[in-house]
Image 1 (spheres, rainbow, N blue to C red):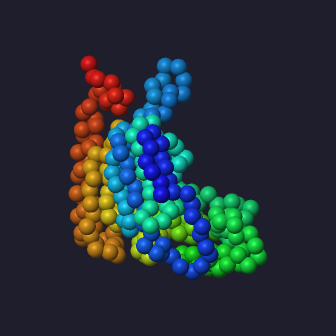
Image 2: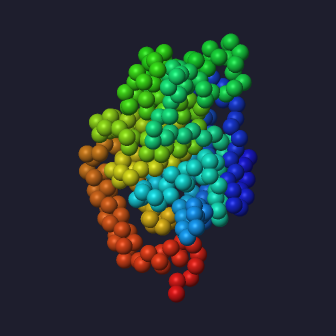
Image 3: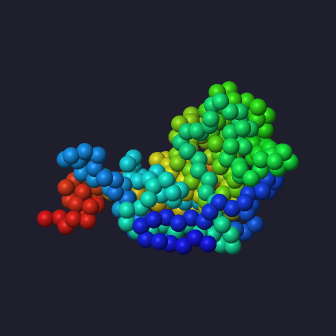
Amino acid sequence: MSVERNGRVRRGSHGVLHAGVYFRNGGVMAQLIARDVKKVFASSGSGRKPVVALNGVSFEASGHTFVSLVGPSGCGKSTFLNIVSGVESVTEGSVELSEKGGEATIGYVFQDPRLLPWKTVMENMLYVQPAHGREKGSREKQREHVRYFLDLVGLGRTESMFPGQLSGGMQQRVGIARALSIRPHVLLMDEPFSHLDAITARGLRTELQRLWDDTDATVLFVTHDVMEAVLLSDKVLLMNSSGSIYADMPIDLARPRTQTDQEVVSTQAEILAVFEQMQKESEQEPEEDRTKAQLGVEAS
């Protein structure tokens, strides 16, 4: 069981993941609690100010839920994912990632597939599987396990192909299958469809809804696309340019959803209206006062 400590992130260690053709985690669900998280990057040179990436971020997510972080570029969305994954540490505050009934594991889907070009699809998938499965019998079980997830994303016939032989959408599907293959309790997704054409991205959003519905995973999803967030999420956290959560908006719509559903369209419009109000308030606030507020200095 992981416990919270101020100024850092504690996560459950990666548990033993046996190969097999099963997807759910048997009721084992993660709980994520962020408390007043602040992240400041030190200045990179003389005369330059520190960069405040996150400023007082607090929220909770647990169980089978899908949370999207939406906001302008540079508001700290990806930084928060990196803190949860352990790539970055917090400057102040705390993040607790624990499990209910077992150890928490994390899967990460990036903007780019990040496949090793000299390895086949099968070899890329096997690369993230547990190191203890090196014996001949265990390795074959892992191959069966990997094939199951490739089949889930419609790529069962590509295992002997190299990334360069796949389209961008197919490569990203491999990236999603790779993350799901470790059966994560928390799935981090950093704008996974942003580099794809509109038709491919639309198909993958539909596919993601289907795949996630068969898991117990908590998903943290970063996007600039409000429609995408409404389509996928149970909750949208709208972040402002100061690195804070401006609005916490639940999305209580039936699933599955399509982007032409009237409720999806109207909810998108409501969130865009809030976003525009946030932008107006940000533009009206003097830059000097905003910087002082971020750094915890009283405005004169």
